Image (tube, rainbow, N blue to C red):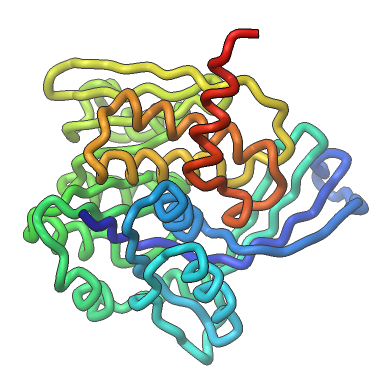
Amino acid sequence: MTVYNLGSINADWFYRVPRFPVDGETLAASGCKSGLGGKGANQSVAIARAGGDVHHIGAIGGEGVWAAELMKSVGVDVTHVSIDIAAPTGHALIFVNPDGENRIVIFAGTNRMIEDADIKAALAKAQPGDMLVMQNETNGQEYAARRARTRGMQVVYSAAPFDVSAVQEVLPYVDLLVVNEVEADQVATALGVSITELPVSQLLVTHGARGATWYDLASGETLNVPAPKVVAVDTTGAGDTFIGYFCAGRDAGLPIAECLELAVGAAALKVTREGTAEAIPPIDEVRSFLEDVAAPG
């Protein structure tokens, strides 16, 4: 099957800081580098590196062609990434402390300039059972979700960064909602229900270093998978790595438990490396890593 990802593409700028600045404070960074990022691009790269067939739907500026080329080099189909020569590619400023935790400021740029016509063209060949993945860093989500539903696709929605109006608009078309613990509470509070009463058939809640929990809200089934213990260097993109791997596994028809295990393993391995999309590990490294952490002694 095929995964279509309506997602952001960013140029990420990383700054190593001794701690996060407080109001009015100026800090000197000990390091600076740039790379490919954006929740959408990260997830597409993760899907590709997990062995999935992924078509990215998005937009870049004229100075962002390198980002599409890098995505293509790792196996992402970028046929439906449009280029607006006069507009700026989205970008992010990422501050990373010695514990690997981060603070991020993003500028949407072309990520909020995606045309409905481009989404329609991208989904024109989608088949029933194919998957549409979305996040909250682009426009066009409700339009894409409606078209995907009419084509019999599975719709996966990562409600981050959280925006209650965007969630309420898209949720009627969503099959799998993916959130972290904070976002789960925000969605439930906004709708006035508990998280197990959300109007979706499946819910996936990530718990950072503690793993993740999958809920089948129709049957009441729950699966929890702990994350391998690692020393974090940079947590940027860990959630996107998790989602990409999980979606690739589901698209390949793997059991939920195996999808979760691969996803938490990939995310754990990713945080041991600096960077975002380029730091997402390929499937063979993830399987080897999981075998090593499972081995006695």
